[in-house]
Length: 628
Picture: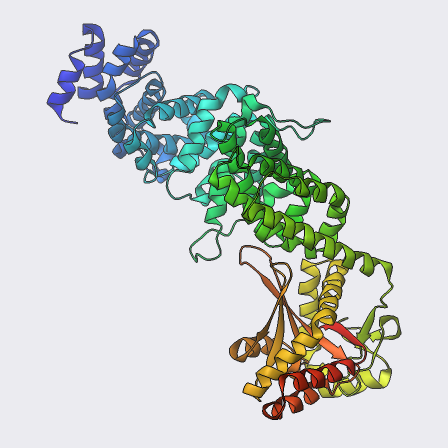
């Protein structure tokens, strides 16, 4: 700031304050002058405090900040300037300068604030720096005012330490008994942390913790609106803004945690808050708001939209079905049905909620019906769900998607009942490729090392060890460990059972498709892909490069059409693929199908169908076994 501009600004002050201000700017700074300045500010009017803006600008000069290595030997002048910087920051709380002056003051203010924060323990002893609690409140209130200017908001993304201080203030606010009274400061802290590109490392530095500590802070805010520790959780609409801020923050950080961007921060905040109860919180909140929102343009509708979108984001993470299961236990389906009832021809919900409903049903709820434990929870609600869907007032795509979900649920529940009834004996195949007998699993013995391969006798195990298993045992042990880290034993067994049941229903069509492909390309290596991301599962062939990539991961495949690929909806990557081997009692089936393909040009379509049907009927017992 130029000398003449400073002088003209100070001329508006009363004579006594004007002399004090000029002595601070144009004379050496002393403790006596600073004491008089502090006393004067206690009784100054807002207009007089604003008149000292040139003084604040002078005292907050970043060049006066001492280097870290110089803190051990502070001279009197440096101590005075540090004290002056602190007094200026505190005075700014009472000052309401024109909003556009923030571009001058805010960078200096934050650089000094960050210095005081970074060295507050040392400075407390060196210059008698008092409690910083009031300081943080004042800082956030001042920023809340200055943030009314768009230029100041954009400025914050470039100011060093702003997110660190905002996160530190957030921690302080959340630990206070009068948390509810700090709404404005808390909102500003959130706004600073999420302005521009989120730098998670700075936020973690500000809270002096890790990602779990960050999740605890988020949940502390959520608990103000939905106290899960109560006997009957409810949504406190008066504190709904705390829940909205927390949800916005989680959503923004989850956007940073994106594996598609190499420079992103790989921090599982979504997992952390899910484990602490945010799924229950959001479900209860959405359920309450679905009954509270009276019109399509209601403020509650917009809020409910945010909650449902965040739930969908949590479901999209790896093994999101577990998060989804928690949400369904808390009444998620009742929430979605309640929202769907409002999405009628007479009372249309916002397009965002409508699209989010479709997304949840198509990409999350329907694909989740292949998981054993999810089906267990849905089974208890099936009658209620099917009745509610039948009486929904909505129509068009949304109604069709709901009916598809009910059909998928009905079919998979029947399959689960069969799986639990043990009417179908659990069979597996001997791991010795020269044997391949299919018997009940209880009559087979596992390899004691990898626990992945089964054998019908000691002779088969010895033979397979010499020919193949000696090389692949370690890899199969690692593959089994990976599988066990993702699915429980029952979940994995049910997936194999479901795949086998679907194969038995479609085996004639699959065999015809193989013959048709081999007729066109005799040496093609084919796999059958069961895509469970939709209902009914789509069955396609994997050919050429796709087949080669899958077969390269397989240790026991001959590539003669006996490999099945199970494609599941799972996580942000979109899907997870598991390779299984279809074992047949009659191992000559693939070769016989190839023979039919070789003479397909001399046969009619009906003759080919009859030949294929005869071969399929002769395959005997079949089973699906893991082929890691």
